[in-house]
Amino acid sequence: MAKEIKKTITIPEGVTVTMQGRLLSVTGPKGKIERNFWYPDVKVEVVGSEVIVDSTVMKKTQKAMVGTFASHITNMVKGVTEGFEYRMKVVYSHFPMQIKVEGDRLMIGNFLGEKKPRSAKILGETKVKASGDEVVVTGNNKEDVGQTAANIEQTTRIKRFDPRVFQDGIYTVEKIV
Image 1 (cartoon, rainbow, N blue to C red):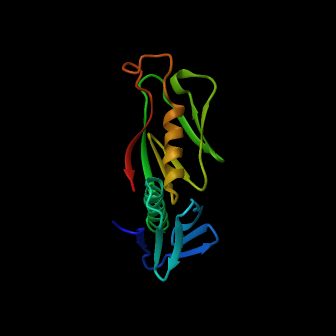
Image 2 (tube, helix red, strand yellow):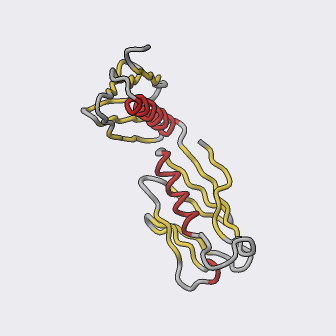
Image 3 (cartoon, rainbow, N blue to C red):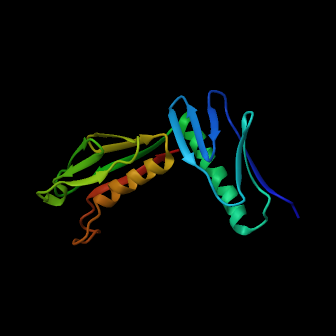
C-alpha cells in the first residue's frame, strides 16, 4: 500500500502559478483566479512548472480532498487559458420576455406577463450577454459561471402553472468547458 497520496498538475506555457501561504494564484491570458486551499494533512506546493497536491495520511477524507484540490487547480488553469461558456436559450410561447443586464443582475421582464421584472444575480467577474433569444454566460471561474447560469435558470422557474403547457423560461442548451 502506498505511503502517500499524490496528484501532480502540469502548468502550460503562458500560465503563472504562485502560492503565498494557503492562497494559490493562477494568472493567464484570460485573467487571474485566487483560491484558498487548506485541509488538515493536505499540502499544496508549486515546484517548477507543476503543482503538487499530496497527503501522508492515508484516510478517505484526505484522499478525497487531494482529488478535489487537484480538480479545482485544473479548472483554474483551464479557466485562465480557455475560459468557460454556457449558452442559454430564451423560450416563450405566451408572453415575449425582455432581457437586459443591469450591473451585477440580469433583469427578466414580462415573464409570463408579470408586471414586476425578475432578477438573477451574476457572480464574480462573470460576463452575461443577452441578444435576441440567446443568453451567453462567460468567465474564467467555472463555479461562478455555472452558478450564474443556474441562477438565471432558477429565476425563470414556473411555480403555479403546468410546466408541460407553459414551457416559458431560460434554459441551458450548451456548456463549452
